[in-house]
Amino acid sequence: MRPIYIHEREGWPRLRWDEAGLARPLGIVRHAQGRLLGQMEALGVAQREEASVRILTEDALRTSAIEGETLDADQVRSSLARRMGLATAGLPPPSREVDGLVEMMLDATRQAGAALTEERLLGWHAALFPVGGSPLVRITSGAWRTAASGPMRVVSGAYGHERVHFEAPSHDRVAGEIRGFLDWFNAPLVVDPVIASALAHFWFVTIHPFEDGNGRIARAIADLQLARADGTHQRFYSMSAQIQRERTAYYDVLERSQRGSLDVTAWLEWYLACLQRAIAGSGALLTGVLAEARFWREYQAVSFNERQRRMLHWLLAGPEASLTSSRWAKVTECSADTALRDITELLAREVLVRDATGGRSTRYRLRAGSGG
Image (cartoon, rainbow, N blue to C red):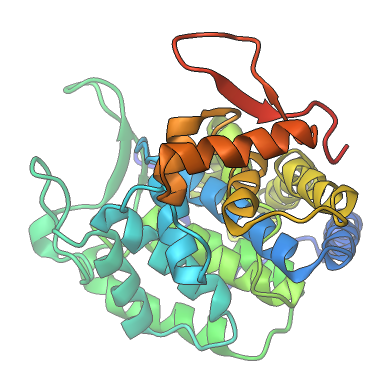
């Protein structure tokens, strides 16, 4: 028997939830956000920007991984660094698809105060699919789905034995559904912005207005609202990374909620718990940033030339745990002799040590405990 989906219920989209029951988990999340933001405020501007780049890189990788796509981490960082005015030396040029995803993510968070409009959503979609999908699966980029795309279903299983998890509203409802969603999203909030983030995610992905990319755009919309909740355009935790870790539970609660009544308490409970774990888990990603801050404090009396400073940041940021003199020369665009002289000075100052792993070329890494 075909289920009744939430968007077919009388009263949709007037969602409801147990506000009193959610007060405690919401309070825990808001407290965790405050503590993390306070910790980041103690860092310098450069360290906060680096932390944001690392989180955004992780966010881009994971929001695509949820949809089964694998991106190149160096390309993502390259695109982010270029758009944020940071060093890109040694990083590869990003693909159009990576650039488009990064463009959407930065627009969502760095322009969080701007209204969310149809034009903006269509622009995000066009950025995600600059060439109209893959060679095997073509889609209409920057446009709502139409009758030509057929029913929009979320399915699993082998051909002939598919299981339909969800069926979105028909294409002729999309324009009206989006207008209602945007009217709600842009109106003055009557709920906590974290709750609004969860509702926006659920509502948009239920409408499923595009042929592809709905999940990534839904998560960008949620991040936009979280940026408003945090009061900063910088990101210090990744909800997408946590959702990717809990992908099975994510799809399970989404399916149950989309097949249920207009009461979305279960979805909100899961979202808040996932967000709390995302904030707690950000510590692992930010450990390197904090270590870098300690490193520069430890060596604040030491004079480094521009090349040395750049490569120390390179090692601290983690693209490579160790490097050779030839890699040094390539990234800093200097001669082999100059690279070896830079490295020799840092060995003498006990900032670098020779890597014991050996190999055809000598590798160098930061001295253990530097900045610790």
